[in-house]
Image 1 (cartoon, rainbow, N blue to C red):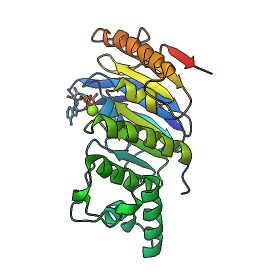
Image 2: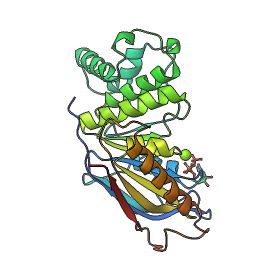
Image 3: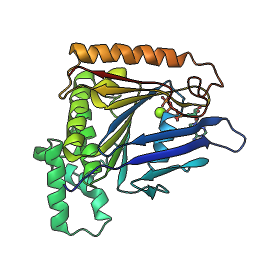
Image 4: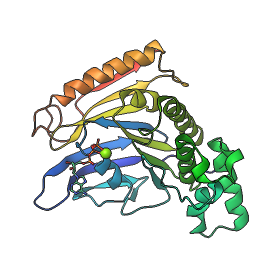
Length: 276
Ligand SMILES: Nc1ncnc2c1ncn2[C@@H]1O[C@H](COP(=O)(O)OP(=O)(O)OP(=O)(O)O)[C@@H](O)[C@H]1O
Ligand SMILES: [Mg+2]
């Protein structure tokens, strides 16, 4: 697949759902390099999904801009694809048809669709299920179909909103590992919104903590760990403890505080952990 990553530049992003409503977040600035995997963690309601929907072009911000390699995001595109908590598959279509559904709207020949779908199914290790009914698949397998459906579009950026939270622990951990390894192999960017500190440490190159009211990114932590990452690895555990402490510190921000003392949307603290 001819996939590559993208440089993300978010500048002064502010959102309120209605003109007189509360500000969800205020002047968020963020940059990411091609191929980087970011995790955004934060308390319920702090604006993580809103931020992700805006980056996906599904929602217009009140103010501010998002550029992906210099292209202003103004709407949805196959270049930036979102995966949700539920796979949202079409139950009357076979696995391969579900994966190819986006391509059928483009100018792809039947042969090209077949080849690309087969490749995407191989990536998520579902090549033997191409002709299965999606209802006959487990929850984890269905989420893999949704992942293949995203990858078949050859996106530069994959946005994930708590994509594995409905899955059991075993399935979740195999998908966490596989999504990271597929993204790294293809060079794709990831932005993962999660409540799960472990997920952030296992999947991201950088963890961002959102807090405050209105929300902002108040801390970031580099996750400089080798792959594959194992939950029980002491370095993973140490980073997890540090991220949890930082998260708890950020959660104590008083309402009206935007950023830990900066108030202007800039990240106040970057910590780096390495076991090299
Ligand atoms: N469509 C909407 N209309 C009005 N307000 C909304 C809408 N969607 C979300 N909000 C509000 O915006 C704020 C941020 O919501 P958002 O869904 O982004 O939070 P979140 O961080 O993703 O939370 P969670 O972790 O529970 O998913 C909340 O106060 C929420 O009530
Ligand atoms: Mg959410």
